[in-house]
Image (cartoon, rainbow, N blue to C red; front, side):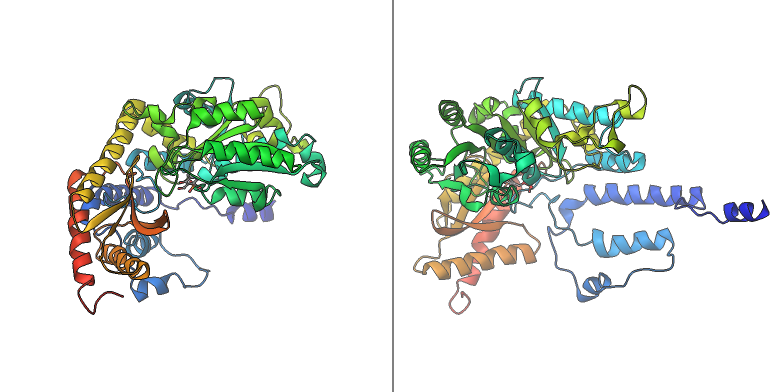
Length: 493
Ligand SMILES: Cc1ncc(COP(=O)(O)O)c(C=O)c1O
């Protein structure tokens, strides 16, 4: 007995010894976090880390304890001071959301509650399903559809394409595998498809070549006639056309495929119609621009990305599937240790039946809290605002003789370059790359680059609720200044 008590006395926990001390420190963390966000505009968008900060991340595995206050100071000094920058008003690289404070509180509370969204009978699971229902409503999907919150757009696309493969395989692909499919499946998308679709095809065992990239028109939208011809050609050659992927907002230029035409073609050809709406699906809630994604509600599946235009803190994506039973039967497995019970904790929906993960984080809370606080109409207006800003930036560039647009802005993505007249393509690329790097290194703005219609260009994606008109003016001014400076004789590569 004595020995047992001794053991009990020695039991450890991760809970703090002094709760009051932790409370005081937590207040400081929250105060610092509020200041951090409030003052973001005053800081550089990005800055490289000095050597001693980089060295900090090579420190070995800690074996003994450190006071929490010290741990927080280390994080403040070495991590918080060197962000990627995507919460800054002048961050426009690649394609990201700019997060929001309420969402961050949601992430904190989700972690405090610590619930596992594999499913079960508890409030977080109901909220997870509610956020999926709200996404359906935003997309004009029926209530009978299903969906799941995942890590982001890439995973959301994989979920949709996996259901498409299984429905169109013509065999029980879960049981027999892709090798048993009678005719090789073909998927179609434009030559502007995001690279995650290639990864999806590889992971699905269909292979990259099963994804036919269809040429695009002058506006970089899938060429519907070329798609129709490719489908006919494949049928003749013994392939089985299975799925067409429409993109609502391509990553290069924000081009939106003709979703109505794709939906009709998919119906005629008996294909699954998946929409990659990671960038543009949420335009459906923007009053001035929703017409651009008309037809999305006709899709069999949609991938959308609340960590982009709903500005949820990373990570959260959402896959929606019109046919809930096709969705569930693609992923559901009920092992003996996860059987449902008529009452109690295991009586709720098993949410892991709708995707690849078993344990799942409480992603819904950060989305739910921000939607509840602001209402969907405000998010719609912010999307309209970003699209208007994209068009404003396009006009500013057109009015500046030293700059040129590489593609007319469609939504919120602007592709342009410093002209550098008389330079070869390679020299122009070197000059514009140098402009981009100096804008980053000087902390002024973060842009990325790409190649459109075979021409290298700078790319600004304004998916940012903090961007103001003055930020766009500054970008144009600084790009011109740097372009002039770098292209002075002897400076340009
Ligand atoms: C069109 C498109 N699809 C898919 C993705 C992948 O989304 P995520 O980065 O959330 O995985 C992106 C990312 O920007 C995208 O632009």
